[in-house]
Length: 581
Image (tube, rainbow, N blue to C red; front, side, top):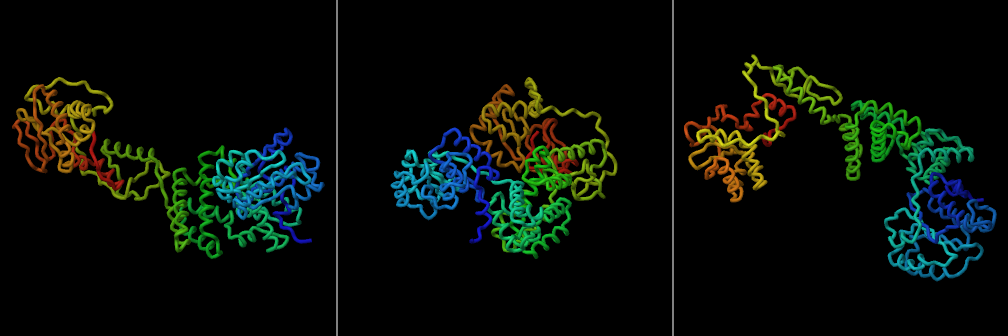
């Protein structure tokens, strides 16, 4: 007798033999018991999950001599013929090679004839998505209203390619990828029956490589039996299929989390010399760090991961070495490496550089940054230096209140500055200020300066919303008769030009006239460094010597001289883009 491969020999012959598809088998059995058998079924799922086997088993259950029944006898002529694929009443059609209109027309002409022996005439069309649009359309009417003795069973791996008009005429069943534990259990059963010694790690490696397809796992086991005989170890599986062992994955991920670059390079060199697939290695690492992230962030959901008990314990131990932010950063780097892998000339180089980036990846949460900035502010407020010259430059993500905040340090002043006599508390930006009455004419500039943001700009914003934002870059310089001079620093020259737009200009003019209770015109000027602005003597703007008008906001240059701001900019290697108070 000719040899029969394991995938065919161990094809399910009863509903109870189907692995990992209980939601489908239960529905079909209930339909048989309730005599609610539809005329068309569509089985969808990844390769090797049992779509065609389910269709054959269902056909056998319907045409069995004792049927329709949920337990075919496997002894009658109908059952034996369906199992052997020689039944005249159950026709299996390959959708890839019979995808034209002519084949569908022939099928449509044969539908009218009654079955030869069984109760139903059943058509099983595999890879139905390969049918052409014309073939689908030719099948529509027959599929919607077939004769009572005809049933259609469709199977496909790509349901999105099947016309919606076809899907709507079928009962659809989505078969799932089979969990690793169930594949291992099935492989161990086959190994016992076939008198094969299969190591636990070898079964796990085969199940990992199958990626949820039981047929792939059975075919791999068949190949390994031909390679090694009756005793199969994990090393045999890894050598034949180029997989990476679970121990290697755990060692590599631990080295990444600990930042051991030399260990990473050593492991990658060993795997590359053993001929391992670098792209598959990246994918398995990505899946490993995904499981680590779930274990760390959702411990209650870790039991739902498709892993065995020993793997779960290892994941829990590794999770103690990482933080969620770092794991997400590592996953991001690995995803980028996988995308670039297909275009890379040296996959090993790409993998090594990517894993080194993962090992050196440090992340700091927003809360941690705010905490550090607050410590800087408190240090300066208390007169103590915030940065130590001898502090290390590197920032570690897991430390609380580090001693250093960046590669550069700010030396402590030689002598503490004298404390001011009184510190006026800063106004709250949320609290609404009452509108003050206009000041006497001699104090008009001071009144404009004091109410510039909360009264003048807010009133202009109500008239022209965008004009209020532009005026944030300006400040009043002088009041000369019926002219009010508004100044812009040279870096805001573009804002000055925007204020010359008629509706912007008129809005500001209207608000200033109402505020001063007399008609005024508005002039705009650029404030040249060290230059004077022509204005009355009692309201002369101080030169760029450090003093400014009372109540006016600090300029960008003044903020840059502030020690706290300066140290923060040095720490983040940043710059001041805009000033808002």
